[in-house]
Image: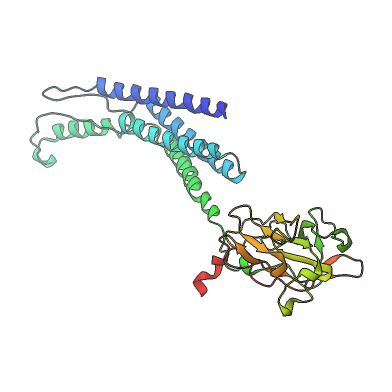
Length: 334
């Protein structure tokens, strides 16, 4: 990072030096005198090369920005890349305006023009020759056009590429779930979760087998409690075999990962077992279908019905009881 900053500082000093040199050369050559002023209006080749070089560096800086964005490098490199690209492009425009584009001011008496057929053809020919000799002042038009085109394309790509960060619409994704009847619960290493390995008061994170761990609905928290303490709704009476329950890991407040489990150490005096979100401390009662008992969450965590297969591993007995994620995902529909 220090090396990148040092390179940026050196480039900035070179740009300032080129700009000052160009302004000085233009200012020193001005003539303010009466009568006809005859000067060479051709652009300096050094100035043209300076413009082409600045445009080329601007293109490289913009390409560096795109590379840093695609490869997810440090955000400071993103800022450095786009900043240098814009700065170098502006420097090229200033140098071109001051030292390449002709800005000739001439003070002369206006001659009396006559039609060429009127006998004053020699004077008209001399005037035409003087006009043609002036030219447009640019000797390396192709080089400057190529450099400007490359810089324009690179800067355009740098402006368009970040649109990818806007992301796709998530309305449908919030409603999609990999959970179906028979899907096994696996740990972070892809191994099945045996029901016998869960002790009362235990807590772990499991995933839908075959689904991406990055999928919002794929992760669930699994806890085991005393079946006699459960107070689930009547239609969920068989969702917790041996007192094992599974709830969505995405908090219904802001979508944070629910990864804290409150286990009572002295049940007669302390609150019952609960899942707690560490972001805003929404608390969900695991005994009562993850009912919200504290915090800003707007609804209970979706519950996953469980079953135990012939090998003793936990499997889903169906889909989740509701949509996964923040409660506000469906506000506009209600």
